[in-house]
Length: 378
Image (cartoon, rainbow, N blue to C red):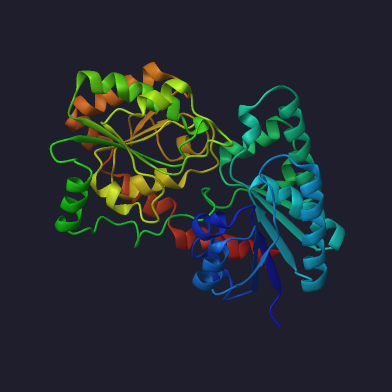
């Protein structure tokens, strides 16, 4: 009988997108059970990954009563299934899973850290989130920051002991599927997309991610608006979901989003066509674990502008394979966008080796092997 591993995230999107393919791979060696809040996407995980799934509702916000209910329901599930390993991703799932797993006597309780919301809050809320993270790591048997910068931050803030921390390989929670993210779109498909979004003859900046303040959207929209006043042939494509309930944008940004040169595309299950038509990828996030969208842009040899934060600066080296800018700095962002718009030679110089870099360091097969080897070593 194969040993059981329960993989847990707060919402099913994380299982379906961020861990795509990994559950099916691990399921060849262990019996994998996927747990998340309910929704159609959880059923997609069951079908696409070939694993059993269970729903346990988890709130993304601070909600003591709902969290207690989630812990109790997950505890009952773990007592019934008796897994060898539980492995959680995302802060709330980690908090719920580590408590339930500890109470249920699960021998190996693993938590992956792929970003810390507490980096961008202050006061009482920050102290509360710090306490939640400390409790999560205390009850975990191992903690896996998905970048070396995150590991350093956790050590600096004394959230747990260094002996409990491991970064697998070069970082990243799932790596990148280089067979999938490959410039293979037909000219007809590219032309159709350019026609649909009126990109012909335009210089296209691309952002892929959640359309929220912590991703640097306010700064990006402001910098592009200034750039677009000077260079009318520029376009900004924003590919991703709004999350106004959690992270409302500024009033100025909402006004600037009405600019016809800013195309808000919304969430796309397949972002490859947009990577094909872009000239420059821009990702001015405030905080990250390890950003998949930057890896995807590099797989298409796109010149990248990213903030000098952990994760991003572990993929991009300034003026070597992209440009690094300080977070929350509209002037530096504008300057970098202006520089790459005007300098085709620089664009080629800092992007030509990006695909080779991700092939060598962040290919999915390497990341999955590291995860499997870690499980086997327990």
